[in-house]
Length: 245
Image 1: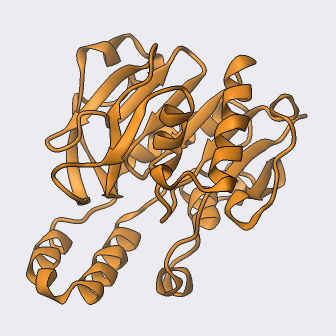
Image 2: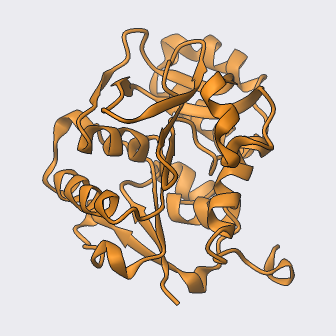
Protein backbone atom coordinates (compact mmCIF):
# COMPACT_ATOMS: atom_id res chain seq x y z
CA UNK A 1 0.00 0.00 0.00
CA UNK A 2 1.39 3.39 -0.99
CA UNK A 3 2.11 5.92 1.76
CA UNK A 4 0.63 9.38 2.12
CA UNK A 5 3.28 12.09 1.59
CA UNK A 6 3.48 14.92 4.11
CA UNK A 7 5.50 17.57 2.28
CA UNK A 8 6.87 19.76 5.07
CA UNK A 9 7.76 23.20 3.73
CA UNK A 10 8.69 24.85 7.02
CA UNK A 11 8.86 24.73 10.80
CA UNK A 12 6.92 26.43 13.58
CA UNK A 13 8.75 29.09 15.63
CA UNK A 14 11.01 27.50 18.25
CA UNK A 15 8.86 28.51 21.22
CA UNK A 16 5.79 26.95 19.62
CA UNK A 17 7.71 23.76 18.88
CA UNK A 18 8.76 23.59 22.53
CA UNK A 19 5.35 24.38 24.03
CA UNK A 20 3.02 22.83 21.43
CA UNK A 21 4.41 21.00 18.39
CA UNK A 22 6.12 21.35 15.04
CA UNK A 23 4.13 21.26 11.81
CA UNK A 24 4.43 17.56 11.12
CA UNK A 25 3.17 16.73 14.63
CA UNK A 26 0.27 19.16 14.25
CA UNK A 27 -0.83 17.45 11.04
CA UNK A 28 -0.49 13.97 12.51
CA UNK A 29 -2.64 14.94 15.49
CA UNK A 30 -5.28 17.19 13.94
CA UNK A 31 -5.49 15.10 10.78
CA UNK A 32 -5.71 11.88 12.79
CA UNK A 33 -2.94 10.50 10.58
CA UNK A 34 -1.40 7.09 11.19
CA UNK A 35 2.35 7.71 11.51
CA UNK A 36 3.00 4.28 9.96
CA UNK A 37 1.15 5.29 6.78
CA UNK A 38 2.82 8.65 6.17
CA UNK A 39 6.15 9.58 4.58
CA UNK A 40 7.31 12.93 5.99
CA UNK A 41 9.70 14.79 3.68
CA UNK A 42 11.15 18.07 4.94
CA UNK A 43 11.78 19.84 1.63
CA UNK A 44 12.98 23.02 3.37
CA UNK A 45 15.83 20.97 4.85
CA UNK A 46 16.79 19.62 1.43
CA UNK A 47 14.98 16.29 1.57
CA UNK A 48 13.51 15.00 -1.69
CA UNK A 49 10.21 13.14 -2.07
CA UNK A 50 9.88 10.02 -4.16
CA UNK A 51 8.21 10.38 -7.59
CA UNK A 52 4.50 11.32 -7.33
CA UNK A 53 3.38 7.89 -8.53
CA UNK A 54 4.90 6.32 -5.39
CA UNK A 55 2.30 8.01 -3.14
CA UNK A 56 -1.44 7.68 -2.63
CA UNK A 57 -1.71 11.44 -2.02
CA UNK A 58 0.11 14.46 -0.61
CA UNK A 59 -0.52 17.01 2.12
CA UNK A 60 1.56 20.22 1.85
CA UNK A 61 2.22 22.21 5.02
CA UNK A 62 2.62 25.90 5.71
CA UNK A 63 5.91 27.75 6.00
CA UNK A 64 7.47 30.97 7.25
CA UNK A 65 9.02 31.32 3.78
CA UNK A 66 7.32 33.28 1.00
CA UNK A 67 6.47 31.71 -2.36
CA UNK A 68 7.63 34.89 -4.11
CA UNK A 69 11.17 34.34 -2.81
CA UNK A 70 11.38 31.46 -5.30
CA UNK A 71 13.85 29.59 -3.13
CA UNK A 72 15.52 26.57 -4.79
CA UNK A 73 13.79 24.00 -2.57
CA UNK A 74 10.42 25.68 -3.22
CA UNK A 75 10.95 25.74 -6.97
CA UNK A 76 11.78 22.02 -6.88
CA UNK A 77 8.62 21.37 -4.85
CA UNK A 78 6.58 23.37 -7.38
CA UNK A 79 7.94 21.24 -10.22
CA UNK A 80 7.13 18.07 -8.25
CA UNK A 81 3.56 19.33 -7.80
CA UNK A 82 3.20 20.00 -11.52
CA UNK A 83 4.18 16.38 -12.14
CA UNK A 84 1.73 15.24 -9.44
CA UNK A 85 -1.09 17.16 -11.13
CA UNK A 86 -0.30 15.45 -14.44
CA UNK A 87 -1.10 12.05 -12.90
CA UNK A 88 -4.08 13.39 -10.89
CA UNK A 89 -2.45 12.63 -7.55
CA UNK A 90 -4.79 13.70 -4.72
CA UNK A 91 -3.42 16.91 -3.16
CA UNK A 92 -4.35 18.83 -0.01
CA UNK A 93 -2.39 22.07 0.39
CA UNK A 94 -2.40 24.39 3.40
CA UNK A 95 -1.30 28.07 3.54
CA UNK A 96 2.12 27.94 1.85
CA UNK A 97 1.00 24.72 0.18
CA UNK A 98 -2.16 26.52 -1.05
CA UNK A 99 -0.06 29.33 -2.51
CA UNK A 100 2.66 27.05 -3.87
CA UNK A 101 0.27 24.93 -5.93
CA UNK A 102 -1.42 28.06 -7.31
CA UNK A 103 1.98 29.49 -8.27
CA UNK A 104 3.13 26.18 -9.78
CA UNK A 105 0.10 26.14 -12.07
CA UNK A 106 0.37 29.72 -13.25
CA UNK A 107 -1.48 31.75 -10.62
CA UNK A 108 -0.33 34.98 -9.01
CA UNK A 109 0.88 34.94 -5.40
CA UNK A 110 1.95 38.02 -3.46
CA UNK A 111 1.59 40.10 -0.32
CA UNK A 112 -2.02 40.88 0.49
CA UNK A 113 -2.77 44.60 0.15
CA UNK A 114 -4.47 44.63 3.56
CA UNK A 115 -1.54 43.01 5.31
CA UNK A 116 -1.41 39.93 7.52
CA UNK A 117 -4.63 37.99 8.16
CA UNK A 118 -4.38 36.34 11.56
CA UNK A 119 -6.58 34.83 14.26
CA UNK A 120 -9.77 32.79 14.40
CA UNK A 121 -11.93 34.27 11.65
CA UNK A 122 -15.05 33.36 9.70
CA UNK A 123 -15.03 32.19 6.11
CA UNK A 124 -17.97 31.85 3.74
CA UNK A 125 -18.50 29.05 1.25
CA UNK A 126 -19.35 30.27 -2.25
CA UNK A 127 -22.05 28.82 -4.54
CA UNK A 128 -19.49 26.67 -6.39
CA UNK A 129 -18.82 24.79 -3.12
CA UNK A 130 -22.30 23.25 -3.19
CA UNK A 131 -21.23 20.86 -5.94
CA UNK A 132 -18.15 19.62 -4.07
CA UNK A 133 -18.72 16.46 -2.03
CA UNK A 134 -15.72 17.31 0.18
CA UNK A 135 -17.55 20.39 1.46
CA UNK A 136 -21.07 18.96 1.54
CA UNK A 137 -21.11 18.40 5.31
CA UNK A 138 -19.84 21.89 6.17
CA UNK A 139 -22.03 24.88 7.08
CA UNK A 140 -22.19 27.91 4.80
CA UNK A 141 -20.05 29.87 7.30
CA UNK A 142 -17.55 28.55 9.83
CA UNK A 143 -14.48 29.65 11.77
CA UNK A 144 -10.91 28.87 10.74
CA UNK A 145 -7.45 29.67 12.12
CA UNK A 146 -5.26 31.88 9.96
CA UNK A 147 -1.81 33.43 9.85
CA UNK A 148 -0.45 34.60 6.50
CA UNK A 149 1.04 37.66 4.85
CA UNK A 150 0.93 36.42 1.24
CA UNK A 151 -2.16 35.19 -0.59
CA UNK A 152 -3.30 33.80 -3.91
CA UNK A 153 -4.07 37.09 -5.65
CA UNK A 154 -5.10 35.51 -8.96
CA UNK A 155 -6.01 31.80 -9.15
CA UNK A 156 -4.41 29.77 -11.96
CA UNK A 157 -6.40 28.75 -15.03
CA UNK A 158 -8.89 26.02 -14.22
CA UNK A 159 -8.94 26.61 -10.47
CA UNK A 160 -12.28 27.35 -8.81
CA UNK A 161 -12.67 29.53 -5.73
CA UNK A 162 -14.88 27.78 -3.17
CA UNK A 163 -14.61 30.07 -0.12
CA UNK A 164 -13.61 33.56 0.95
CA UNK A 165 -13.08 35.56 4.11
CA UNK A 166 -13.73 39.24 4.65
CA UNK A 167 -10.12 39.98 3.70
CA UNK A 168 -9.04 37.16 1.40
CA UNK A 169 -11.02 36.20 -1.70
CA UNK A 170 -9.31 32.81 -2.11
CA UNK A 171 -9.69 30.78 1.08
CA UNK A 172 -10.35 27.44 -0.66
CA UNK A 173 -9.33 26.52 -4.20
CA UNK A 174 -10.43 23.42 -6.10
CA UNK A 175 -8.52 21.84 -8.98
CA UNK A 176 -10.97 19.29 -10.33
CA UNK A 177 -11.64 16.24 -8.20
CA UNK A 178 -8.07 15.55 -7.12
CA UNK A 179 -6.75 18.75 -5.50
CA UNK A 180 -8.13 21.04 -2.80
CA UNK A 181 -6.15 23.75 -1.01
CA UNK A 182 -6.91 26.06 1.91
CA UNK A 183 -5.39 29.36 2.96
CA UNK A 184 -6.38 28.60 6.56
CA UNK A 185 -4.75 26.09 8.90
CA UNK A 186 -6.84 22.99 9.73
CA UNK A 187 -3.84 21.66 11.68
CA UNK A 188 -4.04 24.53 14.22
CA UNK A 189 -6.17 24.01 17.30
CA UNK A 190 -7.12 26.90 19.56
CA UNK A 191 -4.09 26.47 21.83
CA UNK A 192 -1.69 26.71 18.89
CA UNK A 193 -3.45 29.80 17.53
CA UNK A 194 -3.25 31.39 20.99
CA UNK A 195 0.49 30.78 21.11
CA UNK A 196 1.00 32.27 17.66
CA UNK A 197 -0.77 35.44 18.75
CA UNK A 198 1.37 35.61 21.89
CA UNK A 199 4.47 35.19 19.74
CA UNK A 200 3.35 37.99 17.41
CA UNK A 201 2.61 40.20 20.40
CA UNK A 202 6.17 39.72 21.61
CA UNK A 203 7.56 40.46 18.15
CA UNK A 204 5.41 43.56 17.63
CA UNK A 205 4.81 45.30 21.00
CA UNK A 206 3.11 48.22 19.25
CA UNK A 207 0.30 45.87 18.15
CA UNK A 208 0.00 44.09 21.50
CA UNK A 209 -3.54 45.32 22.18
CA UNK A 210 -4.72 44.16 18.75
CA UNK A 211 -3.31 40.69 19.33
CA UNK A 212 -4.77 40.54 22.83
CA UNK A 213 -8.24 41.24 21.40
CA UNK A 214 -7.72 38.52 18.80
CA UNK A 215 -6.68 36.10 21.55
CA UNK A 216 -10.08 36.55 23.18
CA UNK A 217 -11.71 35.36 19.94
CA UNK A 218 -9.60 32.22 19.45
CA UNK A 219 -11.25 28.80 19.34
CA UNK A 220 -10.80 25.31 17.98
CA UNK A 221 -12.03 25.00 14.39
CA UNK A 222 -13.60 21.55 14.01
CA UNK A 223 -15.08 22.12 10.54
CA UNK A 224 -11.72 23.00 9.01
CA UNK A 225 -10.19 20.04 10.81
CA UNK A 226 -12.88 17.82 9.31
CA UNK A 227 -11.71 18.74 5.81
CA UNK A 228 -8.20 17.50 6.58
CA UNK A 229 -9.42 14.36 8.34
CA UNK A 230 -11.74 13.45 5.49
CA UNK A 231 -8.88 13.77 3.00
CA UNK A 232 -6.69 11.47 5.10
CA UNK A 233 -9.51 9.00 5.68
CA UNK A 234 -10.13 8.68 1.95
CA UNK A 235 -6.81 6.76 1.73
CA UNK A 236 -7.29 4.71 4.88
CA UNK A 237 -4.32 6.56 6.41
CA UNK A 238 -6.14 7.61 9.58
CA UNK A 239 -5.40 6.19 13.02
CA UNK A 240 -7.71 3.54 14.38
CA UNK A 241 -10.01 4.68 17.17
CA UNK A 242 -7.91 2.69 19.60
CA UNK A 243 -4.86 4.72 18.63
CA UNK A 244 -6.40 8.15 19.11
CA UNK A 245 -5.22 9.86 22.28
